[in-house]
Length: 640
Image 1 (cartoon, rainbow, N blue to C red):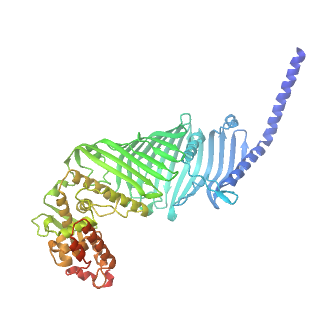
Image 2: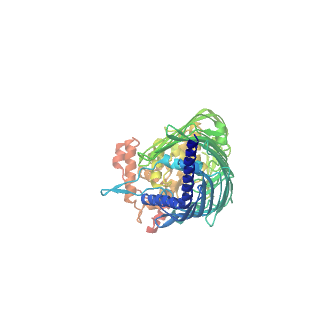
Image 3: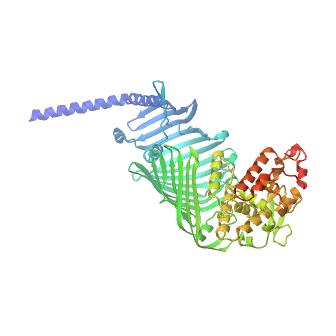
């Protein structure tokens, strides 16, 4: 028995001694092993990826702290990331089973340099692998994997954010197209008990903003909470975007996100809130768009090749709530789809929630009843011509109590219309039969009326203010040109633009124009003939020539009912660009060939629609003679 105990003591002593010896040896060679592992991993990464990692020095302190000096990531000979020093404390025991859980982090002097263009960006190249060649063929990179990118982001947030740390002097430089730079300075990031606090300063040497941010993370429940307070100067643009005159700021922002995985699909649920959110850009509106409060409860699903905002999402703009469905797909083809279906919207809540910058003339309308709205928008970026656009706003026991700034009801009675050019009044037109220059529709040549119906709005007498197909075609052209090039306007829309709105081609004007048209047409505030009559009496027919009475006199020294067919079609042809009518003629006063071709096209269309007789069509010649003051504008080639 004693011999057996002695034997076990020897075995224990030998084992313990061996372990101590191995531990002592490990203490001496651990850094060699660590450096070998790091170098191997760096070499593997550099061999497979476009980005290249370089580390000047690195060391393992004890068994739970690693330190790096001068850690750099380079792309195409340019430094994308550089960190002077970084020290990471992790759980040794968790690391043994492959779970790298960072407990503390300390870093100094971090530089991030990213460039973005229409075709590429350095951020997305960070983890992109090189092309791999096999037998003279090249294996192309996989399609963008949205879920993989999202998983990477949330893994960084939830698993790598430490319990404690301090990161000093972070500088981020973002270079956009045309060398527009955004500089982001972060003096410190303080982390304690998974609560991160940091000030952020954004500038472009001309404009600056600052944000105080706090972020709390619960690793166990995968729950993230962020709160930001922004400081800004109202007259300054958002840094880096002064080239497009973008203003973007808010008072406070709050949101939280919970991350889960359901059937291998990433699910993000949460809430968000913005107060005093201000947005302005000249192509959006002529004045600032202000949202006092924007809040949301959202649910997002992300798979390999799509991201989806579920229709259970609720977004609130003031008193208006809606539930959008948005799906963005990257494969097999890049596509976006948007659906909204709101069966019962309180009418007063709708008008009260319209932001003044977008709807300056209609946001104070008083109404009762309800509205329903349906939207289906679908765009395949490879097949833009297949765009789907269905938008329907329907009234239900709807009634306007007060029109506010715009007295739309006066459209069916006498009123005074003032014409503005560049914000200045240039003409006053009395919309009344007592005005000798106001011409009743019956006293305007049917040739001109029908020509305008062919060139401007073929469905005027049967639609409710909108031609969905024309609007869809206009949107297709705008997307192709990447700018607002075509509006798809109907006669009612042109009338509203001239009567109530400015002429700036901005999104807000178009939105309000559509809303006013909807009110006029759906409430039947005036007959179609009345709308057409006012339209003909106020539109511009030449430089400073407003109304059909002055138009026919300016060109032909005639009254509106005396127009011939060629004269009427010519007037219809210049409505889109009346100030440039002289460009339709050569220096001898003869219509140019392309104008003649267009006039022949319109005459043929009128014949096909039985607006003119076969004899009139056969006798038609696209020639006119200017007899009024207009002929003085085409006396020399410089006017063309």
